[in-house]
Image (cartoon, rainbow, N blue to C red):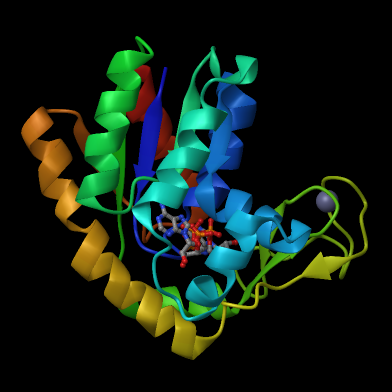
Length: 216
Ligand code: ADP
Ligand code: ADP
Ligand code: ZN
């Protein structure tokens, strides 16, 4: 099964993608994670993306389409994948349709995570991640059982993203409403869209998604 998690920054896409990955053996494809890895490695793509990401704007379509096109050819994607943070523009969605058709793959469902803007700022400014295994946490909503120690892997180094500050979040939300929200209509018209309430607690969101996926 191949699916998209669609929603603004802080909607919970990464959190839920990791759970679906574990529960269903699908692979999470996060263009944000891939771009951050490219920035950290200092590749040409990373150098082109860095300033744009820090400003909370979108990296060019050709860069992210190129990254995804290569990634879905990898053998671990054969069982299915969860797109997290891609597509983010109508041009990316059209390119994805074309890519999937060429590769004889299908898009089974697009899950729209409906959330309100204001609480997202608090979700994002409180977000941190285990540097070792990538598990996501929150200062208030998802604390590790023991302070500073990852529940998953015991790692003790936690990181915060450079773009997870209030000012950049506002730009990212504006970019979402302008450039990404039109995808709700795009996938609605294709008949693959399912919407869930992303304002509920993390476990409740997981069960809503599970119900949707069981029906696909
Ligand atoms: P996205 O990938 O959509 O940007 P994340 O999954 O990283 O969002 O979630 C953003 C932050 O909010 C994280 O710190 C996460 O722990 C927290 N979070 C995720 N889902 C919820 C939820 N349903 N309620 C409260 N906090 C949440
Ligand atoms: P979040 O879901 O929390 O907003 P991501 O990790 O998905 O964050 O994205 C971080 C940044 O990476 C975005 O603000 C943007 O600059 C860039 N980015 C990620 N995915 C895309 C994409 N599909 N198209 C354009 N830019 C992207
Ligand atoms: Zn960890």
